[in-house]
Length: 195
Image 1 (cartoon, rainbow, N blue to C red):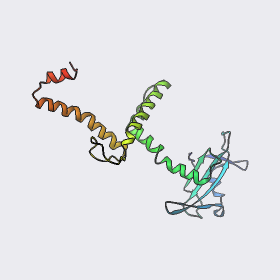
Image 2 (image 1 turned 90 degrees about the vertical axis):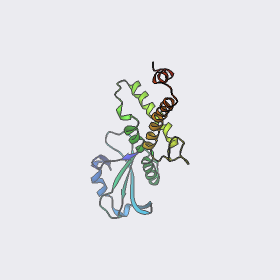
Image 3 (image 1 turned 180 degrees about the horizontal axis):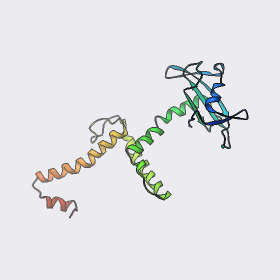
Image 4 (image 1 turned 45 degrees about the horizontal axis):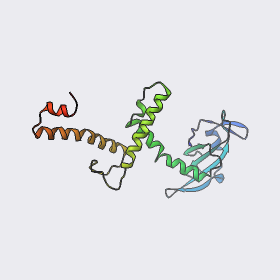
């Protein structure tokens, strides 16, 4: 399930055409009205073939205005039996699940920083990214803020920064407390097994 670029080739009625050329042949009377966020949209859907693909795919064109010549978006899915509403719902969920995970994984959790060469090592790296994301996710939009979070966390970035503050803040506070209690730096290092 994803976007289909308008310059991609399609096989329609035995002819190979670009998506941009094919959508021009879809008359406005062939489009079906749907509602999205209270606004009307129009779609056309057809199961067709793509060059180099052994099976049919479902293409969905989406227009904001009923008689526009060009749709605002083309979608493609291998789920040819899905009705168009299900295709559109599934695509919308990408922007609440899949895409935010990729963004957060690359920007905050090191997914894009992997420089390992073997497939096994890359898989392990990705597994750690998934574990980190899964560990942080329950703290996102929790009913109440955790004691260590200081406030209700709304994004994975906020959760990461709160965990970082906690991870560094607690040991620093402990060292300061030990110093104020009269312990020497040597004693503190000894207790932390840093000697």
